[in-house]
Image (cartoon, rainbow, N blue to C red; front, side, top):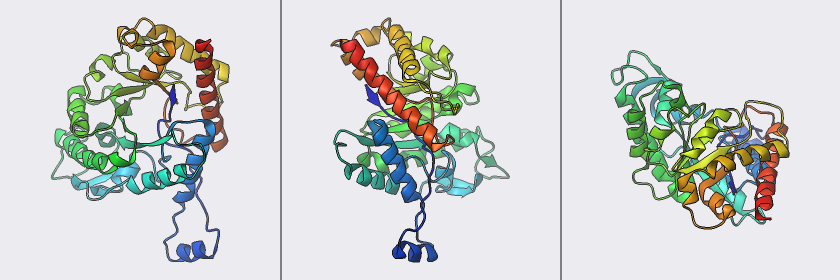
Length: 324
C-alpha cells in the first residue's frame, strides 16, 4: 500500500552556515525555511513515505495562503480576494530537487497541498467589508475557490497528486452543497488525482462527500474509530489515517497494524472494494492509501519521526503477512 502524509511536519529552521549565508542574512535574503523543507524531505524518506509533502513549513495551513492572497491583511479581509502569484510552487520545486538528489527515490513523489475554501473562510475575519457579509458568504467561498483553482493549476505539473484540506466540513458549520460547488470548481480542470482530507467524525456526512469531484477521501481512524463504519459503504479510494497526531505518545507497530487490520476486515464487505480485480494485496493497493490522521506540525520532531517510521513499518508488515 502507498504511504503518505497529510501535510505538515515539525519545523526546524536553518541558520547561516557560511560566509555567503551570513551575507544573505544581513541583506534579508537568507531563507531559513529551506533547511526546514530539507529536514522534512529527509525525515519522510527515512521513515519510508512514498508520496511526500514539503512539510508546510512557512506557516499554518491557513496562514500560508492568506498571507499570499490579495485582499488580506493578516487574517483580516480588506478587499476582494484574488490569486496574484504562485504560493507553494517554489517550495514544491525545491522539495522535488531535494528528493531527486537522494538515492533510491525514483518511485517517490511530492504532493501539492491546498487548504480548502470553507476552512480558510472559517478562520478569517470579515470586518466592515464591502465585498463579503460574513464568514459564510457564498461570494467569499466562491472567490477563495477561484483563487485556489489558480494555485492548483500552477502546481499540478510539479506534483503527483493534490490534496485539498477541508477539516471544517465535519463540524456542520458550512453547507455541504456550497462546499461541493467550491471544491468542484477547483478540481474541474485538473488532470492529476485529487484527494480531500476531512477531520473529525464523518459517519453522518460521508455519503454526501461521495458526490465531491475528488478521487480519494481521507479520514481519521486512529482518533475517531467510529469512522471505521464508513468503510463498508465508501465508494471512493480511501486515505486511512492510522496514527493519532493529537497525542505525543508513539503508537507501537502492532497497534497500528491492528487498526489497519480492523479497517481491512470491514472493507471486505464493501462491494466497490470487492469489485477490484486481483488478490487482497491488489485490492488494497488500488483502494487504500495509508497516512497519519492529520498534520504533524505541533508534534516534537522525534515523536513525529518515530510515528511515521512505525506507521510505514506496520503497513509493510501487514502487507507481507497477507501475502503469505
